[in-house]
Amino acid sequence: MWRFSLTDAVSAQIEQKMLDELYADFEDAGLMPLWTQREDLMPMSPQSEAVPHLWRWSELLPIAERSGRLVPVGRGGERRAIALSNPGLPGSPYATPTLWAAIQYLGPREVAPSHRHSQGAFRFVVDGEGVWTNVDGDAVAMRRGDLLLTPGWAFHEHHNVADRPMAWLDGLDIPLVAGLDAGFFEFGPDGLSTRATPQRSRGERLWGHPGLRPISQPDRLNSPLVAYRWEHTDAALTAQLELEDEDAPGVIEPGHAGVRFSNPTTGKDALVTMRTEMRRLRAGTRTAPVRTVGSAVWQVFDGEATATVGDKVFEIATGDLFVVPSWCEVGLTARTQVDLFRFSDEPVYEALGLARTSRGEQK
Image (cartoon, rainbow, N blue to C red; front, side, top):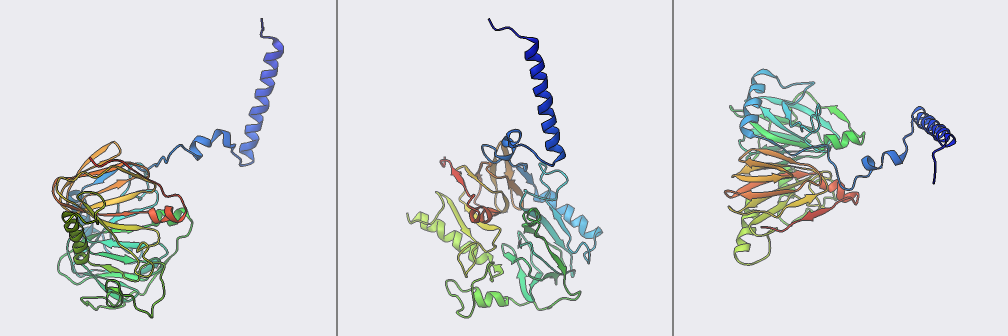
């Protein structure tokens, strides 16, 4: 029979002392051994710190309006933009670890001054008009349902020519660029580059013709078409559902139409780091549950639905925003016909070879 001996105990104590000294030396030398870190460094599947969350437009807009009465727009702060802060990222103004989303509010006749930055950006308008955004001196009208782009390092400014305020969704890749230590910012001139208010911007006149590309223009990393108008988005979604009625291909799945905003020079995403899409669900449609590597923010443009995100169930209506963390299952059930705008960080994961999607069955 084996018996515990004093020699064994002393040997174990000596070995433990040596191990303690080894770990202390690791710490002093700025080292960490893999065998104590593997589960955190390489989990079995993505473990996002962000959590599913819902922000209601009925609560956001009044807060933005109060900010409009109390907080001026000008140099320094630059924009009256109110960021969506994910509860899983406490103290951070980020919707997800890679995406920044905010409600920007501009009062009657106000001007948001010119600046530029390395971060890419867009504006999506749920309601209203009267604001023009000047992108590198090109005056671009902002109207309901429009997607407006501000590619990284483009000078941009906003001015409201109307007697009523306007609010919209801003989306940027701020946390992604911050994590890469690649952020730059530069103030522009104090005065507006133009006060023109054309019906169509120069970019639309050059690039906004379906399937037709100006021969004189080279490929661009980001889309040179900075305005994607609702009339075209609406027509494309309507056509997909009409084709479904004719038993022709076009929809993502039964009752679920979708379009992706693309760069006309490459056919890829309109912005190199962010994917922008619009979805339409027929009333009563229940989408298949989907998991995707990469996070997304959704905003209801019109209609009502139920969004199931992980273990959370959100009743959503016009203007509401919700966030889907990486590899978190999401499914939608439309109570009425519903249109939803979605933006995500998926182009980054695809470029790095890290993209992955798991799709369940539509019920």
